[in-house]
Image 1: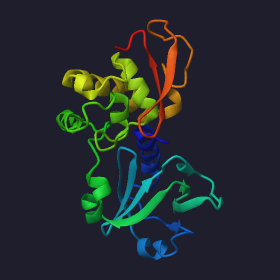
Image 2: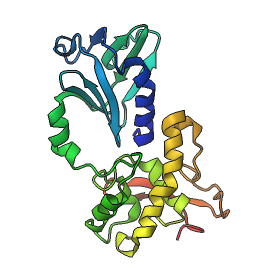
Image 3: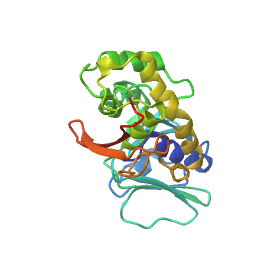
Image 4: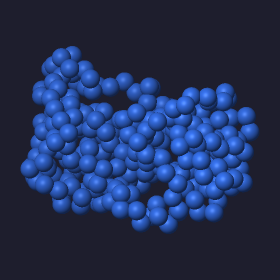
Length: 250
């Protein structure tokens, strides 16, 4: 699933094409009424929160996207013809399209503020001023027996972390992702976020492919820090694979 850095990178690429400009052409085969509703409107801003992306149009209309496991945003000088495109937008000679994904909807601006799915999201891990107090409050209200790695995937605790950055953040901070929340100090929990943020912010600007993982999908390979073999095991109700080094993550 695309994580917060991937969504932020998509927004970073879309902004120069659409932000502040009137969309000259819009197609959405699955939502044929959208072109008429958005015709002649400029894209006021493009922002993200965790794994959610928002294209905000004049007139308080917002395209809200969540890519799930399969979706993607693409920017191209060539017109996309794929039937898999959920929406296609053109401004000048550039095209922006979303392909597949489980959720693309047109909302009012007010609904994005009060929609229960969105209002329950935790603080955005990539926000310029990450709200660490809110994050720690959310963790303190969670099940104290819940392993840290599983809690980090809960978007109600913190928005934007997926399986990759769960593993990489815990490794960077030297903390075992299997440690129960009740055995974790606030400083330790905060160190996981602060350890992953520089790499995530770089990925959000330069692209996810510029980041080389330390432990993610490196099962059996030596840990870059201590040389112990990297381990992998399913974690949480969703049984998402967690990667960690038992030698230096305590």
